[in-house]
Length: 303
Image (cartoon, rainbow, N blue to C red; front, side, top):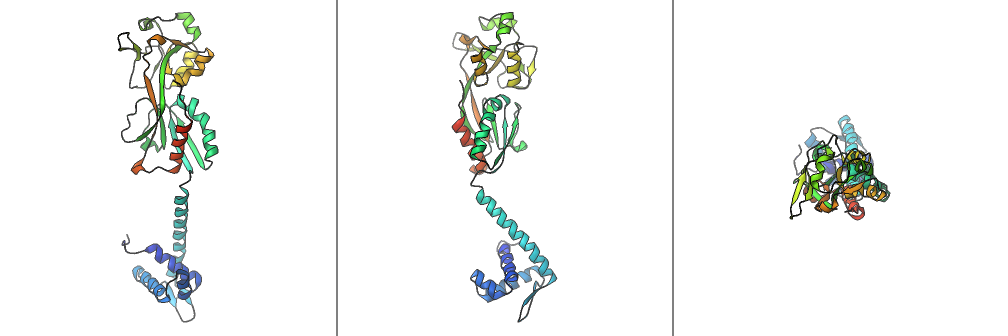
């Protein structure tokens, strides 16, 4: 590796300009240096490399084979440096690939409908979205942002809260017609309660017990699913009861496809919705910051 007191890029630039302009004097004028200073800089470069780059004469300069090879490589390096600087400066405007990981329900009902407006505002950003209810490691998956519903357990990451949503137990009119409407949480023992096939922070369905506390009823049924959207479809199809976020099923309740169950016993607990992201050193790429600001501006959760 080079020493810190060697400005290798500066040497390359001066040497390349000497070659381009055909002499030390012309290059000196271009850099506002003296011809002797330019000559000394090139001589120092030759000493460091241990080869002669230019054959000097009173009439013209002639590149040695080593000098020609070094000149070609130096031009490519200087060009790459210019490109890197332009791209870094352009980084102040949102651009590039934005990788987003989102749970299925929030993605289908909130995120995807907002994507066209975000891209219209930031046309140089390419949005790469993965919908899954599996909690992924942002660092391993190289995701920029993840949408999470529920308590955040990612101590290594930063989070921007977008709001809160509560949950409710629902069933289709056809299911309730066949099995009846329960009057209390105890009546759920005879009902098909749909569950998830992955571990959740709170496994049971919480209900107010009438004494200021709650009682949890486990979701025991004949179907387990990987995401809330699959559970929503099974509930609408009349297979069983489901407990889902209000933001997820509001339109179904309004349309009569699903009916709230035991709302008098709903404890009113809410789950926060966060945008989780990596913020190393407090620095965020412009595309990530723009996306977080856009979510905070546009997401309105149903409670």
